[in-house]
Amino acid sequence: MRALKLSKKDEIKLYDVLKEFGEVWAPVPKGSKYVYGKIEKKEDLVIHEECILPIIPVKKFLMPPDFTMLKFTPSKYSIPEEDIPTTVVVGVPACDIHAVNILDKFYTTDYVDNYYMKRRERLIIIGKSGTPRENCFCHKSNTSIVEEGYDLFFFDLGDYYLVWVGSEKGDDIVRKGADIFSEEVPKDVSKKFVEFRRNRNKSYINDVDLEGVTDLMELMYDAPFWDEFGEKCLSCGQCTMVCPTCTCFNVIDDLALSGETGERRRYWDSCMFKDYSLVAGQHNFRESKAERLKLWYTHKLKAFIGHFGSPSCVGCGRCIETCPVDINVVTVVEKMKG
Amino acid sequence: MKKKPTLGIYGFTGCAGCQLAVLDCEDILVDLFNYVDIKVFYEAMSNNEDVANVDIALVEGSINTNKQLNELKEIREKAGVLVAFGSCANFGGIQAMALGDGKWEQRFTRVYGDAKFTVAIPREAQPIHKFVKVDAFIPGCPPSTPQMLRALTQLLHGNQPTYTNSPVCLECKFRENECLLNDGKLCLGPLTMGGCTAPCPSHNTPCIGCWGIIDEANHTSELKLLKEKGFKTEDIIQRFRIFGGSKIVEKVQKLLEVE
Ligand code: SF4
Ligand code: SF4
Ligand code: SF4
Ligand code: SF4
Ligand code: SF4
Image: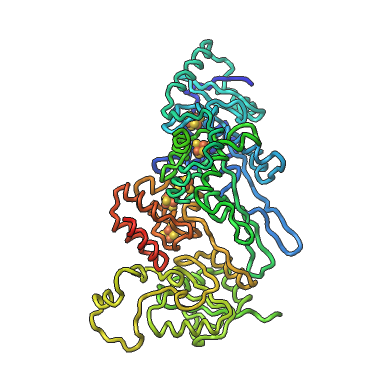
């Protein structure tokens, strides 16, 4: 891995370099929040000082909320020739890159999901470390820094960005932009970098204590607070939509009137919905909302470790910001710890 | 060619928007004529038979008069499969928003005084399942084209229509909207059946529940939440009632008991 320097005075030229590689997407304002939007003008590519968490995370590029998987007739099927553009997404925080690494494991271990892979191969990730937001707790979930999963990663060190190159594609980009990415990194860079990290570590506001929660999930599985949360839960599913590591989807066939041809659609589903755990014969594994919440938090804080070696909560805090009735990692952990 | 299934599209009290939604299928409409033989279409045909023997009957609207009730019963007798089509047929629609709120006779007299009705004797607006067996339902105010076509296709091939048993919030999040509830607005998205693609919150307007109440709706929790946000109980209940129709009645009573 190597590191280069991008002067802030050259930042405006970044767009023209990136656009050579594909569509450029970055956080754009929507109401009081941000969404990843397509950037059409170089002035609109803004690198923010603080971490930006768009309403829907990077997963929207890798597994769109609703898409056609295939079209069929009685004798054959075809996968629509999709024109999936190469997308360069800029300004992705460390936690969300960890989330992509988790999605990569999930969708490529045991069974390879080709729909995912096709999009993953065409996604270029440019990460950026920034000041934590109010609800962030990546310092507690070991996701505040990231070593893999990005193509380039930016640190704001005052009048320049320190740019880590994390992949061959990243390398291609800095070569193409040789006039703005400089090998001549200032001598005091390590001092500045340490200082940046120290300041950042000091600026977290969310102080949730995740120590031991994996075991507590087991011990508190039958605790009464789950029923209290169950009574409150609106089953709106927003927590699962905004969580960067939620992957569930449903598949349905839409037939044409003839009943002979049709298309197969795949769209995001949520374990917070009753029908999600409904099986043949009207049996439902998780009839109550409390059961569904337990499943989710087990999945986020515990079960994933057994399969993939780390919990699947990356500390982004979106559930905290989004759940209308304050069911989130912090309130759940607080209950578990009494 | 196999004989085409016959279809009847009937309408009672409502805005006729559901019937118009069938016409609004445009290009697919022509295709529809290839697969079904439409015997009755109140809104769109001039030479309608009164009530015909049909394989599938789509019934729009609530029942508001005794005459309608008799007609509904006849439709039921002459239909293979009877489908409640749209919110009014399913829950009563906005004309049923006062269901269970005191006596209907009193409300009626307050508005119409002692007017005499000769053509059709009015009665309290009710969804059709209150009177006849309903085999399937298509939600919506009016139903969306994809949802309606999916249901019709399923019916034509002898299957039970599937519907979207997830709340409006799902599609609202697909469209990357900031949650209006968190912004202090009275949004009924979590209580409402999805399928509409969340046009209202996508235009920064709270959902008022026109697709009907979803099975899982947690009115108790949403009422509590909205009160914490400063709304008055009456105003919240009033909003629940707009499209709550017959489904909200029981829930409202329970909620008020809790108060
Ligand atoms: S959780 Fe960490 S990496 Fe993610 S946005 Fe917050 S501070 Fe940035
Ligand atoms: S559980 Fe919450 S904090 Fe953890 S990754 Fe999901 S949305 Fe972010
Ligand atoms: S936990 Fe919160 S965000 Fe998730 S489904 Fe329940 S109410 Fe909605
Ligand atoms: S704005 Fe309304 S519909 Fe959208 S997520 Fe919030 S509550 Fe649900
Ligand atoms: S009021 Fe609600 S259910 Fe009706 S169209 Fe708007 S968002 Fe959909």
